[in-house]
Amino acid sequence: MQLGSFLKYQKGKAPSLAKDEGREVIYLSPDYLRNKAEPTLVPDYNAKVEIEDGDLILLWDGSNAGEFFKGKKGALSSTMVKFLFDEIKYNKEFLFYQLKSFEEFLKAQTNGSGIPHVDKEILLSISINELDKPEQTKIAKILSTADKAIEQTEKLIAKYQHIKTGLMQDLLTKGLDANGNIRSEQTHKFKTEKGLRVPEEWRVISVEQFASNAKYSIVDGPFGSNLKTIHYRTSGIPIIQSGFVTNNYFEADEDEYLFVEKELFEREIRSKAVPGDLIMAKIGANCGTCALLPQDHPVSIIAGNSLKISVDKRNYNRYLEILFHHLYSIGKFEDLKSTTAQPAMNMQQLKQFFIPRPEREEQVLIADRIDSVAKMINDEKKKLSKLQSLKTGLMQDLLSGKVRVTVKEEATA
Image (cartoon, rainbow, N blue to C red; front, side):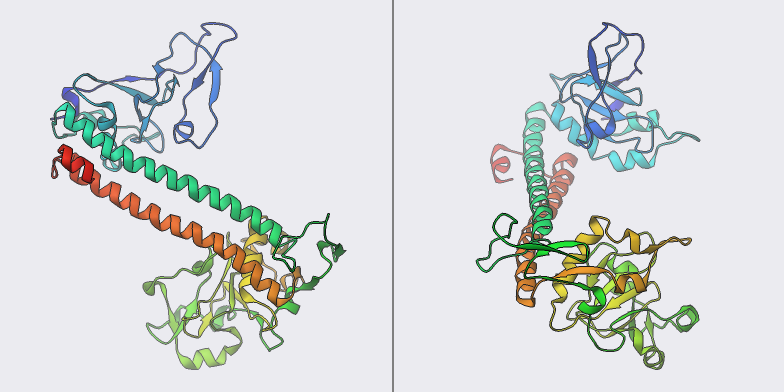
């Protein structure tokens, strides 16, 4: 049956004349309904369209027109509509999931030369399966259970990420004492060296001192004309682009790689990168992001938009990677960037940039402690991905009627 056969809608109204001076209502916004913003309060007004928790809402106008929401108590925005239907015949939760399954299709059908808006005819002509109320209720319960598991996992990931951020701040400035405890200035001696407050046992050294003493330990890729598109091949020595590390971890699909011949690689041997080298984006909006070249990666050449740091074996490259991630996230690299047409890391300033240096053993312990929390986050992210895939499969099967629900099947699901 088509939505238009049983579904009507009411458009929201913008705030107008105050209804009761001193009284305020929540004016619903998309970000508030997505739980990404605080509520916006406006004076209560006569023309408002009231929304209760759980009402079905559609974003009618704007860049995300076609997005469905579960309502929260408040006044409906003028860019949204509220759905009206027979709640005795239709389960509200089931109908939400049914509408949500058409969201991407509806977004792709928005029209308007200026501000995009939902096409009324397309919306109301969407066909859904007609199921009786008990089956709707069972399907809604299954899908809402999946949603709750997803929400709980997302909250756990956010909690672990918060823990990791605080742990990095503490470990990278205070470290671990001989008993494995984070130092504090109340129980341990600290000093100020070269502008950094660090434990007495630590040194403050330049990035150049942290790097290997070998030639070309901190270099960028070949200069312009030395590595151009005419040099690219479909096999040979892989080229490491800055885009491979812009998310602060190394990520590159096989089809993203370009290659150069061995002869060119040997001419530009200064730009050689081996597993364990720290690769940093040198140019672009994300310059300063970095990651270690994986241990199973072949010897490569870095592109002109990248740079690499080879770490002294007396130091721990994973510690430097974690430290740089932290420094980038709190904006400490901003002063090292040039102000040309697009941001670029200043190599000389980077070499002379001061960083805290515990002894190597403590560097390893710090990295291991942070990595243990990172593993918990990654494990939960994998779990989240599986839950999301499970929910997608359930929606496809249950909402289409391909799989019918009985009491026994509900318990299994």
